[in-house]
Image (cartoon, rainbow, N blue to C red; front, top):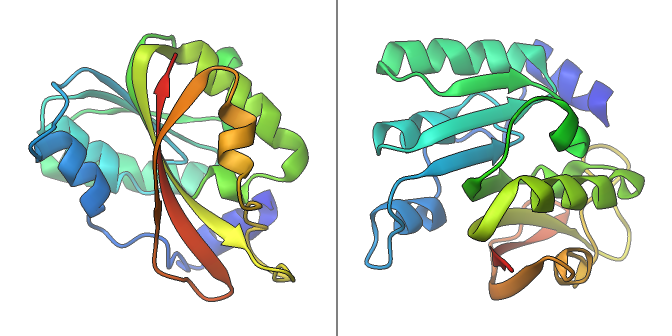
Amino acid sequence: MSVFFQVAYLFGFKPWDTGVPPPELVALVEGNDRRLPGKALDLGCGTGTNCVYLAQHGWDVTGVDFVARAIGAARRKAASAGVSPRLVVGDVTRLTEIGLGDGYELLLDLGCFSSIPDEGRNAYVRGATAIAQGGAVLLIFCLIRRAKPPRLGPRGIARGEVAERFAPGWEMVAEQQGQPVREYDTAWYRLHRR
């Protein structure tokens, strides 16, 4: 899967990068039940759209992505917006090993978890759990695979997989069906760290 994303960024093919923060994040940052700014982590931050948005709203934000070209684009985007999120090239299945620290109050994932090969997902969950403070929010958007997963692109997750994998350290607070994307169904999940 890493080769797919390396090549996609090389050729500028990034349909997942809308350039605007999703309404679900905006509601969490600016809505009626907004969270006060604190320490945030964007997992699989890509070109940094959401890192910039969070920084503009007072969050101390770190973005991590394993594609150096994406982090380079994120740095340029942040500089042109006049904000300074911390942007790190790193593997989200090794969160405790790449020097991100801990105490995160908000973790955001827009499709990263559902792009990780199945065998790396438990390591991702362990790392996210370890660096999140008690009461933290994890806002996660996932591609949900249908009966026959596509041959190219992200594998997607199985229905119920987020609740099952995150159950030991997180409470599922909300699950909302999203709009289908090509060969996938989608969903937004909101979890709270126990």
